[in-house]
Every structure is written in structure tokens, then in C-alpha cells.
Length: 285
Image (cartoon, rainbow, N blue to C red; front, side, top):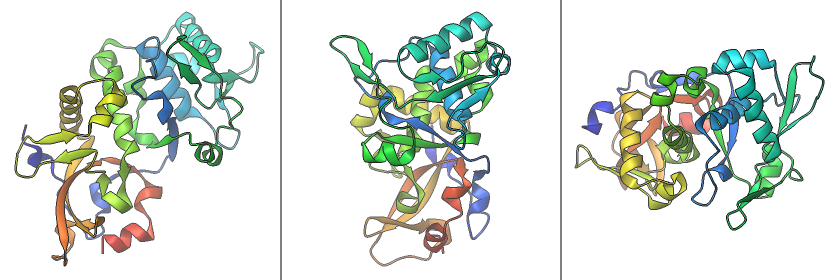
């Protein structure tokens, strides 16, 4: 696959038109659940329901409020399967239901993800750590900010098509690319994590730590990245770095003293909070 054909064409001096700007905010997925020692969820739909709940979390109310009938409809689930999945998430300290009355709309809080002990194959609650960005940062509990438009309901549905197109591994890779995306500093995804070789039309190199956290091989990660590129969810962008920091997109800048040029991956869906920043406008000239 020739990665060069996925390079973004710059059509505006501000570069904004090359993005799909998400105006629906962002949601948090905790990085703890992606590691070489943390187990996968018991099945794909449990993972997808958890991501759905994370996306549905209302920060002002600090809970998820969704009718079970709505969750069923959105994810194409039976009531039995939905209840089994929600019970597993609550019993293993990922969520906590905040109302018990069957006649009320389902409400639950998202908990700080539990610790996992691989020797006892058990989860330990971390509910003493409040689930908000300040507490997560202060307690070194990493999280990924995902633009809401990047994850659609169609990706999370329990259908044959969704299972085939959006496997557990593919979702993990896609979400974790955002973990290493920092527009102001890298212009996209950190090239030390995912390196695009401009001298090799099919060259993609993955940092071993990324593959380990995905519990897969570099070959599997590269194959998945190429599929995501083919789906126009990530693009290759030529950028200039000066003193190790992103200075701007190559097509928008004249040559810079002491510049180094890279091709970096940049997600198509980006939050408006990330794009419309003075620091980024300055760098992009």
C-alpha cells in the first residue's frame, strides 16, 4: 500500500478544512484498560457497551442517563444480553448503578478503572479515585480524549457487519492512536510512536511499546493502521519540525532554518477544542 496516496491536500491557509471538526465534544477512555497485562473484556460487545457508556457520560451530572430501551436500540442488543453486560461491568468495578428502581431511566456512574492482579485473575476497585480529569491526572491514571464524532454507534453495534469491520483489536488501535495525537507538539500522532517512512512507499514502523499494549504484533498493528487509512479515518500529512517541535504543515510554510521534515499520521476526526487554539494557529501561520 502506497501511504503517499493518503496524504492530505491542503485547501486553506488555516488548514481547518482538512479536518472533520467534532463540535459534539469529547469523551474519556481510560488508558489503563489497554496494556499487555490488563485482560480483554469477556467479549467484544462488553467492550463496546463500555465505550458506549463512556461516550454517553454526562459530565455535569457525573453519570450516564440512558433508557435501557435506547441502549438496546442503539447497539442492537437483547434485554438479556444488555443486562448481562451491565452486570459484568458493575460486578468488576467499571461502573456503578446510581438508581435501582426498574421504572426509572437507567443511570450509572463511570468509575476509575479497577486495578488487575494477573496472579489471582481478579479486579480491585479504584472507586476511591474520583472520575474526573484532575483526580485522574493527580493519581497518574491516564486517559484518552476521543472526539465524539470519531466513534459512531454503527461501530459499536452488535451486528455481523460491525463485528467484522470493528473487531476488538481494531477499536483498540484506533482509540490508542488518539492517545499519542498532540497537534500542537507533533502536528498529529507522535512520529516516535508511529513512523511513516517517506523513502519507502509502504513504510510504517510501530514503537514496540504500542504493539505490546495492544497485545498484538507490529505486523497486526501496521495492517490495522493501513485499514484505518483506507477508511479515511487517518491521513498522512507532511510537516516541519524545528528544534524537535512541530512548526507547521509543509505545504503551508516556507523552508525553515534547522527544520526536519516528517510525514505524520493525523486523525480525520478532531475536536474543535484541539483545532481552534491560538497556539496551533500560530504554528500553522
